[in-house]
Image 1 (cartoon, rainbow, N blue to C red):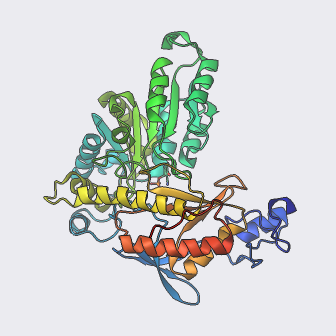
Image 2: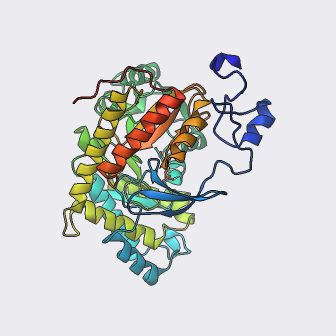
Image 3: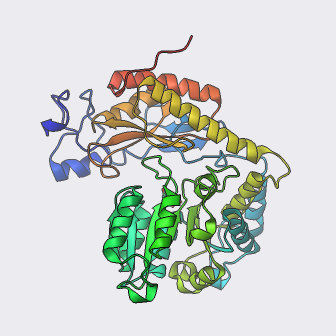
Length: 447
Ligand code: PMP
């Protein structure tokens, strides 16, 4: 395993994500970081225990030796709603008193409260579709809905970097799966052309149905989907478009309505709009929005909806309240300010990192910015050195990325202050020098 790191003479650390015991047993490797320090082999060493999230976007970690307060640069709390909020929190508490934490029932058996109805109306209206259906978990939304939409005899064409929940749903559906090169519309077209002739009517082709699945923002790459091109290719070949907006809804677009708004795509051209409430809305659960007929069909055909307990009422109330704030229905301009702030923060942080000489993936306006580390042994070194200086970053390696494409994934929030970001940049710059991950010459600082 020498091939991957000439500077690491003593250690063997090709895989740094997951429990060391698991990998050592399987691969017979000692795992160390690029300073030759062994990575903890304690069970659950990879699951930091968080004691508290605070409104200033800090988190408190409980470590065996001490309690640590650190700036959170790793959470999906894009608009800062995943903390006490003057509008959302009192309403969520009220709904907790009224309905309790759980309905303890499936939607059809007493699990549909007034909040669930209101939530579905708000979501449909917010994303720009006639109707919506909600689920208690984002992951389950993809993995349970895809098999209801398509089955044996159908064809799913999936972006090569789609999320695990999509892959899970696609595999469980029994449909044939073809993968196209990540965010490459020309390759999508090639794959479609191999399967059907252009303009062939849906009734005269070998597939009962074709669904193309893409994400609004790719969570490991920070890239925006080339949605306008995808939509026009799908129109040409009469394929359905399924868009997962987990990371884009609420986070991008002038009024927070996601990539369709940002890239000027008509939502009528996206057949199935999926998203989660765990990121921009500070809650939990997921949704599917589409035509009235589609949603009506899903309500009766999807086992997870029929037999799974409905989304928790306080979680539903949190989402409704967050959407109201985004839309300005709380009577304040906080929503608009949050949207402006996340854009400014993201673009500022990205350009500063680039000026320092880091290789940063992703597009402008995207709040996700992966800093490339490449070498797997640099992954734990980078996160540990940042954490020492009270900056918590999420680092990602195999199997979530290819083995040699490890990265630190920074997620920016509207609740980061400019001062927070400047301090974090200083820390990341120092750690970048220490670990040796500035792959480009730094831009000279302006006087
Ligand atoms: N889709 C995508 C693209 C995701 O990144 C995620 C999780 N980050 C999910 C779905 C699952 O959502 P949740 O975490 O809300 O269950």
